Image 1 (cartoon, rainbow, N blue to C red):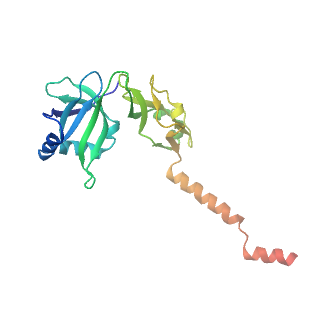
Image 2: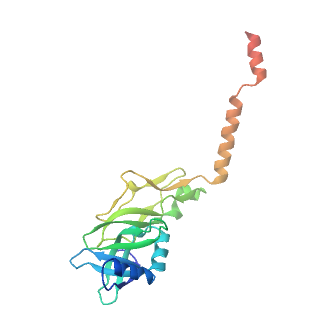
Length: 220
């Protein structure tokens, strides 16, 4: 199961309609709504500064939250929409959906690495590059993995691991419909530079000089 799910504290909003929403904004809050499940929609307010901070961190719409509202049971939610001011681009309203255990959602899952200490490529001085430290997966709300693990124990220099090499949790699948690279082992920079120099030397040897051209012309 997933690790710690971040809390999202909100207040129940008294009153509905544009008037109540405007008052919430004057009070430094962002009005919102929690819908879905077998419960009636719940109007809420979220502190503007806290919401803006979370939005600026990124991936707000693909993060699972544990919503806490006084007087109500905690519930898992995911953001479904953020309305913004047309000029200032600041949040003016936010919608959250309650999740059932069987609900399918898109989440970014951390990638763990195993086998670094025995990888032949890394033992030779290769450099492991984690191209995707997180992978976006479609998962069920009841079976959210804390992470996925890639095994680099057999990688040589130049090898890579793609999503098809990874055993995903039951019911999970990537959102990208192609076999993308997650990690790769590349040659150390010094070795790579030396290889480039050698290629340049070979290329220089293959270029004929003016003298060579003249000599060839004389033979004709």
